[in-house]
Amino acid sequence: MAEAVANVARRINATVEEGKDNLDLSNCKLINFPDGVFKVLRNVTENIHIITLADNELKAINKKFFATFTKLRELDLQGNVLTKLPDTVGELKHLTSINLASNKFSVFPEKLTEIHSLERINLEGNDITEIPLEKLSAMPALKQINMKANPLDKDTVIAIQSPQRYEILSTADI
Image 1 (spheres, rainbow, N blue to C red):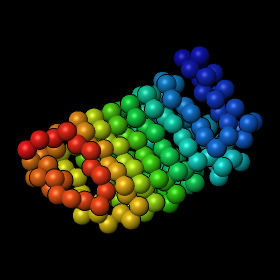
Image 2 (cartoon, rainbow, N blue to C red):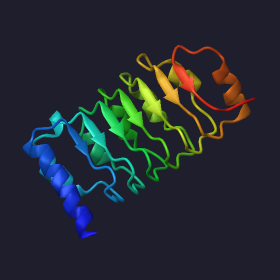
Image 3 (tube, one colour):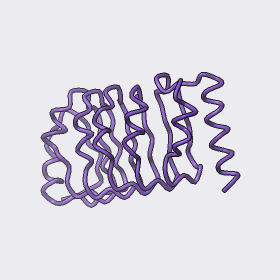
Image 4 (cartoon, helix red, strand yellow):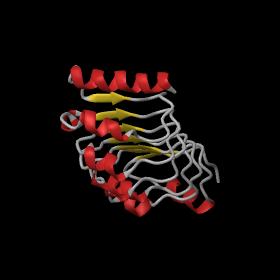
């Protein structure tokens, strides 16, 4: 545990000291986003555009995370145990890409449809049966949504066979 904490501290300090625009806390055995990180990064949060929290054990992301990192363009949460996102995710006005693959979502996180800058959504390998096609169609920047390895219901599979103005990746057959 002490080694994991030291690893997180090193990565955060490197981000601050080197003025990086990205924060990589992947593979750190995190079960939540450490509150201490907000304090250490308080003077540089506006500069952070990419955060990777992949392959941890995150069960939830708190509201404070999205309220703090308001300039995020890319967020990688792949390989955690997330089942939902807080509503504040919809306030990320600069986000272009979110990776939520290999989590535990059973419902499509609809607040993502409120992010007009979002171009790519990856939800591969979750437990989602339906997607909000109408809301997705209203997203002006959306280019691709990956729904591979989800148990999409028959009606959803039929609906995504119709041409969309964005690409839907799916392995579902009717």
